[in-house]
Length: 252
View 1 (cartoon, one colour):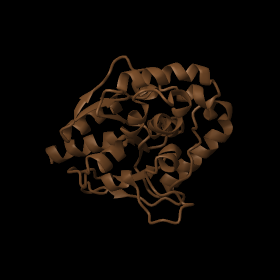
View 2 (cartoon, helix red, strand yellow):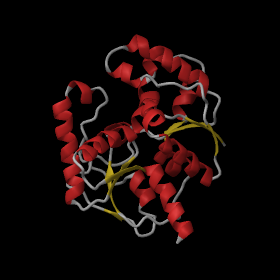
View 3 (cartoon, one colour):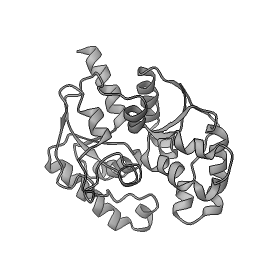
């Protein structure tokens, strides 16, 4: 299959190693990955702040760039949700749009739902807390949120728990928002930071050494708070852990 890799702005600018990790993970499963260099922001920041006229050209460009791929994979729940659930306002009726929505996936759901990955070979001997970001949890249903009376599941957990020597620590409030919320972190800085510190405290109390998740924007928010307070916690995207686990398996 030919997969178009969509990399969110903040990963492109601040965490390029996450994008490279996604490529390595996909290639490990035999996927032909292409990074279209003409790609831009998906328009989510503009749409979230009400600047819909500024978001529409970006949606149109996204469609033009990615419509020909078999699948589009993105290491971000929020950007994936933007395309699948919020592009209708800009692209409804456009040729190829319905197909684009149906073939755009966040990384963990692509691995579990499309590639049908049951187990990932690797070793990651650390205590890990999983942060379930709001868009991925409640819009893409990458896991069970506490208000749903259904059997528990988590696509990120399913991938990680197959690794050797990993310990996934239990959190008191496993689906609570970190407070990032894009421009919310700017407009409501104090509230955002309090929410982020609450999440960090939950992971610390559970004994986590690493906080991981499927959305680097939330992890970026938590990492900033961790770094400024000199805490020993590390933050790693799911793809980074999967790559590190393969390296550990090879060297062990």
